[in-house]
Amino acid sequence: MAKRIGLIGHGAIGKALATRLAADPDAPQVIAILVRPGRSDGADAPLVDNVAALLNARPDLVVECAGQQAAAQFGPAILAAGIDLAVASVGALADPATERSLRQAAEAGGSRILVPAGAVAAIDGLAAARLAGLDSVTYTSRKPPLAWRDTAAESLVDLDALTEEAVLYEGTAREASQMFPKNANVATTVALAGIGFEATRCRIVADPHATGNRHEVDAAGAFGTLALRLENLPSPDNPKTSFLTVLSLERLVRNSAAALVI
Ligand SMILES: NC(=O)C1=CN([C@@H]2O[C@H](COP(=O)(O)OP(=O)(O)OC[C@H]3O[C@@H](n4cnc5c(N)ncnc54)[C@H](O)[C@@H]3O)[C@@H](O)[C@H]2O)C=CC1
Ligand SMILES: O=C([O-])CC(=O)C(=O)O
Image (cartoon, rainbow, N blue to C red):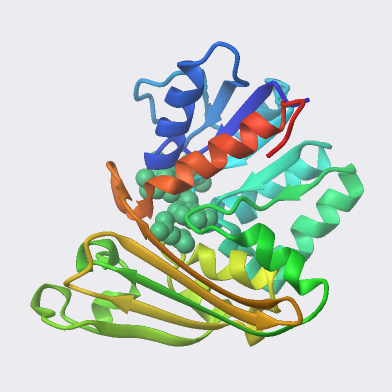
């Protein structure tokens, strides 16, 4: 039962998650938040600026919501200390060296890397379907131009001048997650649940007509077929991040202390 939650990152996801949990005294509570040194903005829990201090707060579970670099940097120490780590920036695992170091640390610590569904859904069905064999999985992400600011998209298209959709990338889940570390973690989630980093076909699209963040997953295999289409509203504080991501992490946290898990 995980009652004491540590967070890495206090941005759009971290703030919303901490606030939502603090509003319910029966929920697991955030007991420390790892932020960049020098940050002191108002928070629902004590801020720390190094991973040793986060571990000293004795969390039962740590939720990373800071970015792929932070997941790679801090994840191993947390897992090696025997503490489960939920990784929002799961695209960090698209880097083979990071995947190896996280897996090795989890094995050494007897802990687990927990991958939330995040901004996508149907990950349970896809991961179950995989057990009998999947033939194909495709993932399409479509977001408005605003969501692609300050990303590699800016060197590919003029985001402000788009009148029609523009395909920013088409290829593997591995490359998609690495090319768009703040926007395409879901490509890795789908890959891990389904047929892996190389076989999962991805399309990443900027669309001036998009009203939200659309995620589509199509899969076929021995189970039958799956067609998912989500129209996510963006998080109020970050247009790149779907609000559903916060709720997915809240569900993971609540489930970690629940008698009935759904
Ligand atoms: N799995 C999924 O479906 C999704 C995953 N994500 C991941 O979650 C991450 C966070 O998303 P948001 O909260 O919307 O981003 P954000 O940019 O609003 O917040 C990130 C926060 O983490 C902090 N941070 C970055 N590096 C840090 C470090 N080394 N140590 C401590 N703090 C650090 C930043 O200062 C910032 O406050 C994204 O970068 C992305 O990797 C985001 C959306 C969906
Ligand atoms: O929140 C979303 O819509 C998806 C996202 O940013 C990611 O996969 O990294």
